[in-house]
Image (cartoon, rainbow, N blue to C red):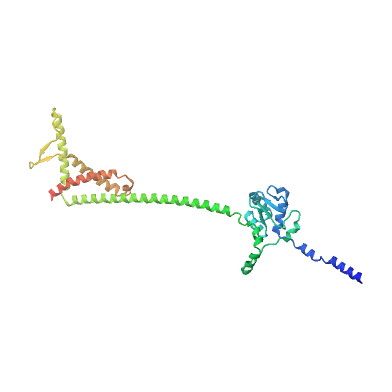
Length: 316
């Protein structure tokens, strides 16, 4: 009985590890299995391989790793996402100068240990505060690896900022140039208004005096006659008579010959006619031109207005 009992106990002891098939049925997470197969592949040792002690793996070329290997095993090619996923399973960065990661259950030739690696569950509220104090030592030993890619993003943001600053400087320069052009156009427009007012004032004075144009034509005819007489006298006299000539009018008054006044008046009338046909139909000519011809015409107009002032007073 004792032996049978002992045997029964022995057989029961032999059958005691019944939970083992249940444990073996629990497959490791797909992320860990794919990562293990990727690291254990000898054809990609130039990109990723096991560490010297076979308890860690090293990513030698992160760009090629993200471009060539990640799309084959995962649905993305983002290396920073892969690193964050490692961090959620408790992997730690062994060497700060290279991408070497380690976990107690991630060993070369012992793939069955992957099922011992569990995903971290975020704690909330008081549980997080309580666990943070108890796990401070273990957390301190683990190097945060989820910050990969932040430096690159910061550099991209800096470059974008510099580009925006350059664009802002260009816009400010364009704004200053535009304001300067507008100010110049306003000044030219003011000059144009002043000249128009002067011409209108001169024409108003001429209209108020009915004999102004008749007197102007009479002076023009007398000027032409005096020039003809002067040329004749120059041909007759050989000893060189003075250019100044005095002639008497019907009242016996001595009038001094002033051809420049008549020429200025003629130029002013021609300028008025020209403005009436061209500038009035194209007011932008004041803004486009340099204003030299208009200024010369106004100078002649001023001299004519000064001369015609006496004529207007005499006629009134």
